[in-house]
Every structure is written in C-alpha cells, then in structure tokens.
Length: 138
Image (cartoon, rainbow, N blue to C red):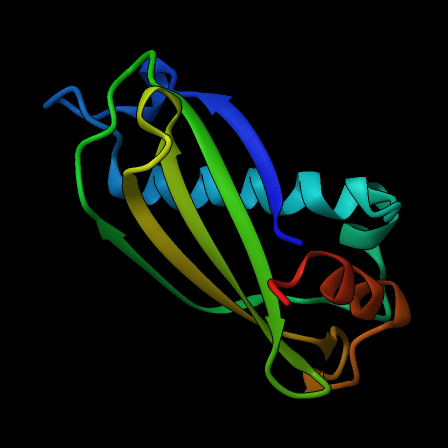
C-alpha cells in the first residue's frame, strides 16, 4: 500500500515566477521518503548516520503537469519498488489536495545501497526490505 504525505507549499519553495522551483519538488519528495521511513519504524538519525550503510540517490527525474503555488496543500503518494538486492526506486505522484484526481507532478528517484567507506554496493538491510514490502504498490 502506498504511503501518503501531506504538506503545504511555502513561499521559500517558490521561484521568481511564484511557482515551486523544480529542485524543491525533489526536496518535498525526500521529506515524504523520510516520513515513510519513520512511519515504518526506522529511526532517522541512526539510518542517515549509519557508518556501515548508505543509500544515496543515483538518479532522479521530475515531470510537471501543472504549476504548484505558495499555499497549495499537497498530497504526495510514495510507492517504492525493489530493482535488485541492492537497488530500489521510489515513484511519487503529487496532487494538489483541492483536485486530488489530477496529478500535478510525477517524480522518480533511484537508490543504491553501499558501504560508505569503500563505496561498493551491498545488499539492502532488513529494515529497508521491510519498508519496501510495506509501502510498495502491490
């Protein structure tokens, strides 16, 4: 079952044209990712500071279908999917809450699990496998 996260667009998220700056959509998606990890019982502090495991983003893309403005209430639907034993992707659909049937943007991030000191791939840890199973679109 996908994870849902809600957030209001802030002035700091927008650019000079008054719409959400493209890179900030990825930051908003990352907030949803962090919230989903926390919701599955993963302790964020230890997860993001673990000296033995890191899960960097190795690819990211965003497609916009309509502008997002300051004050818009967003619902971000997050669906992770395993790719290999060391990689997964997260698909995000962003909706403006007033028009929940209309997708405002789609994002995808791909992550690879590594050993930080050696920068080599490693298998996903059990807590991430459990997170994947819990929130993937089945």
